[in-house]
Length: 241
Image 1 (tube, rainbow, N blue to C red):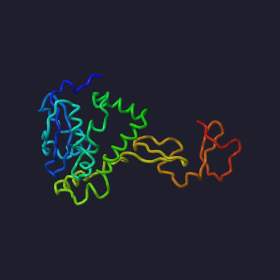
Image 2 (cartoon, rainbow, N blue to C red):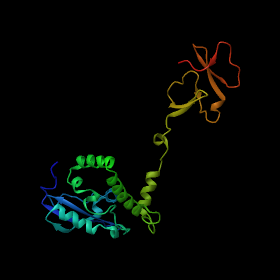
Image 3 (cartoon, helix red, strand yellow):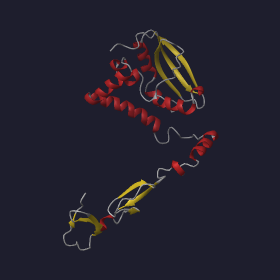
Image 4 (spheres, rainbow, N blue to C red):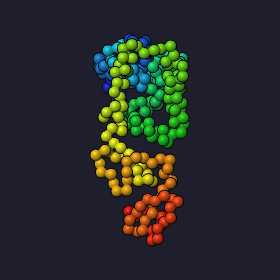
């Protein structure tokens, strides 16, 4: 597979900053167009962009390099353990190909995903190291008392949350809307309210008393009786379908 970055003449370290809360992401990017609109690909960063909108982020180029290899080395220097400990930092893993090897980093999107999946399945050492990098990043960002300590929702965010919660779970937004439970004494299931109730079934839901009844059959038909009831002559426990 050819290196997809060989025709990209610009290689640089960038910093993307959330103008509303000051949180930032440092990464590397190779491109043939300096105005390609790229902001970064980190998971936390993408979530933040989706939440606050692109217009609330500032993208700045910090350094240019002549090759992708030099670029990766510089990112490795900048995005280090110390940076990851900064609660304002959105980076999850150490720098240098986003935690990938050079072989993986040189591949395109689908090929990279396929190669990564293959290594995670066949290379125990790679899986161990890769998993550790992800865990380190997640612990830093989701540690109890770290990412939300001292923070609170803005008033406009609270109002939006209130609007979103209005009428939630009512009418057709309720998962049970238009349905009802029916039971045959042994089992229960949910059907739409306009469906016909099968013979031997009735509205309701059997739970704790499920072991009180049992099916019996005469080979032609089946019915439910209480377990302590005598079984009629010619009948036996079971069910004919």
